[in-house]
Image 1: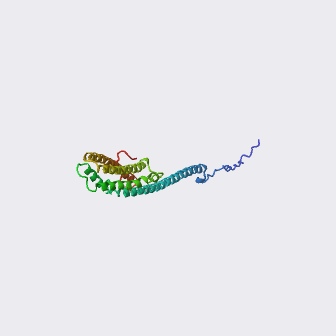
Image 2: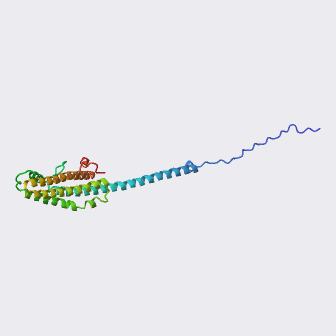
Length: 244
């Protein structure tokens, strides 16, 4: 039997190189889709926040500009009224810082003298006529002054407007009562002693009412000026609950 080539060795097969697999190359970090979406979201959020901030800033700036304009207009209106009031009351008395005006000193003295029995004081008729004329001279310009137009549409609160308008109404009313008191007192000059005292008492009552109303009006006036920063602070105690 033939023996197959025993000494022959079978040649080894060369191992095949490993099959190349596809290697995914990752894109740069900032080019990755999820990164771009996240950055876009954050950028949109920041843009929205910035837009809101700008809007609020502009709104606040407009509000500040409007407030500054209104404050200036209010001070101007207050200064006009201050000039009117001080000019009018300066005709019938004296004004001292921190105190209500002292008005018609001679009127008070004459009425007091007429309340007493005895001779009519010298110059009483002239004093009373002067007081009546001066009261009208002071009240007419205050009464005709268009204060409501000055305080309209300049950002004043309802309380501020009330202070201004009440001060006008009350000061004018007080001056008119002073004029009426002087006119009534003049009627007492030619009357008998008994009637003279009664007439003078009625005139004194009018004068007292005028003084109280003037005090109330002066309190409103001070509050009005204080509310527009023309004096240090309003004197609210003079007017009770009136005000903002």
